[in-house]
Structure formats: structure tokens, C-alpha cells
Image (cartoon, rainbow, N blue to C red):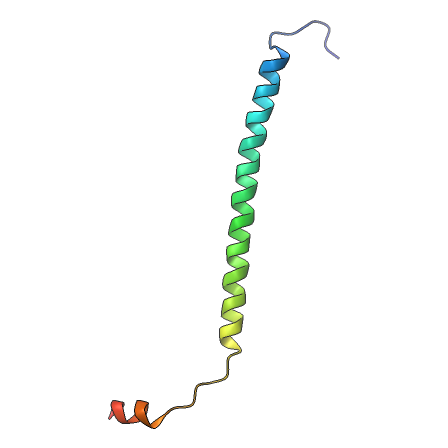
Length: 65
């Protein structure tokens, strides 16, 4: 418990706390966004791996010759 009033006003302390929280919230949002992007990329890669193999058509084989 404080024994005196201190040197910082309540308004200044509240403003400082709000600024700190805003910076924290921005970092948290960026982190969550990055996690979401990684999850989407993994899901797309998994889906691509699970696609059936494309059959080779005569057009593709004849263009290679």
C-alpha cells in the first residue's frame, strides 16, 4: 500500500495502462493472424496432397513429343 499520493496522477496512470494494453492487443492480434495464415496454408497443402492424381491425356503426351 502506498503511504503517500505518489508522483503520477490517476489520469496519467490510466492513459499509460491503456497505451500498454493497446500495444499488447496489437501484438496478440498479429500473432493470432499469423497462426491463422499458417493453419490455412497447412490445410491447403493437406488438401492438395489428398487430391487424386490427374490422368495423363493424349494431348499432354503428344505435346511432349
